[in-house]
Image 1 (cartoon, one colour):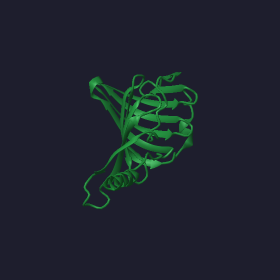
Image 2 (cartoon, helix red, strand yellow):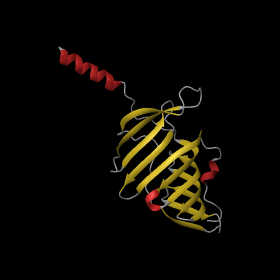
Image 3 (cartoon, one colour):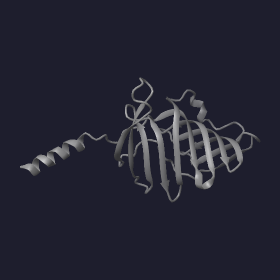
Image 4 (spheres, one colour):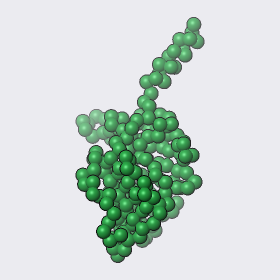
Length: 189
């Protein structure tokens, strides 16, 4: 009887754990990304459309002591990347070299815990996030945190043999796309 009660308690506790959620399919945000091993840092403004697998980024990239600025359009459904160097205005068009990686929580992820970022004793100065971890069906490893209330990405880490390590911290997040024409191919490409 004691074992049956313990198993029921474990099942009840497991049923209360958050499950993978669906991140907003379209959003705009800023992000920071870095890789200390490659002396790489990036900050960017982005528009993200999961439904049509499109991303537009205005990037400031620093590799070592070199800093460059790019306007990049990733059209995954067309397998094309358009990269404009904002200093020279030169556009390079090429086949995509990185796979589509959605910023949501993959359905096969495992809940890792809940955390509060910021002071909990001051109203509107904190956010509750949930962490998820797992391996995607493509064989990549994923870890990310999302807002507990609306599944908005806060941090995102993905790693596999094709992509390498991909890390982003999001901020200034807004739902939807203010200007859908942001995904049009630039005229100088």
